[in-house]
Image (cartoon, rainbow, N blue to C red; front, side, top):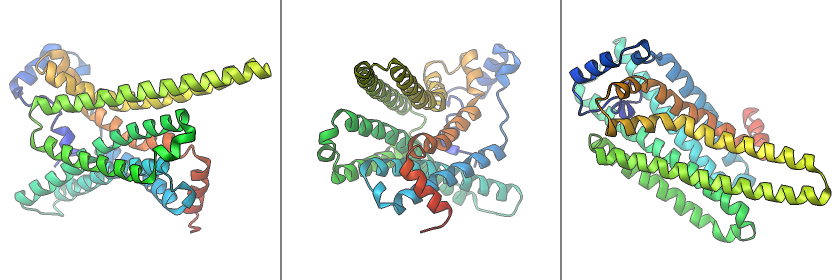
Length: 314
């Protein structure tokens, strides 16, 4: 097994022979085509940090009844998804180290079954993490544009149905992905899913930013405080940039990698891009580390509960 095995199935085009891959790399030339040698310790460290962060988020939300609302339930599900990425990564790393040092001896058939289970777990958590990022964007949009009707629109029952649907769809899609990962149609579905989430978040957050900017402009003009308008607009722009920038930076390279697998599997320059696959995986794990900072720890109520959890004052 290798770190993040299901994603590493997509390290390079399956339909390109090893000889073609090496010739394409040699043809592209240059040191930059050799990729990056990222140590397993970095995967392990980021996995541990992500696991601790997201575990604290889940514990804080479960502890505080004031956080038992659809918005925080969605954030909790996002944290669980990121936790599964970390747990799968750590479990796989542990088995690798034990087998490499001869501490653990397992039959090949058992290793294949374990690999398939971890594959499905990671793929399911990746898809669910992307899905809940979109769900949180929709929830915030409803909160701003339908504030008076929010509790009638986003009821607890609908929130539960939404969460259950995401987890079910993630499990089914991960099973299909592991079974048919060599099929370009599956890759195109993954690419389309990412582009849909990117466009959805882009449209919703920009619309929310535009409304907030309009409200601040109206208030500042009534109170004749242009400085307030500029400051609030700047803060809104920074928040928007962080939300969309982190999403695109962490997920964009990996899905661009998938696009190149489908469109130019033997092109020398595409082959050079494939050699940086480990970096793209690191960025995905970094997203699990950053998500709690963006979506959870900015809440004052959650930070207060988090301090209580850390101090064990249950």
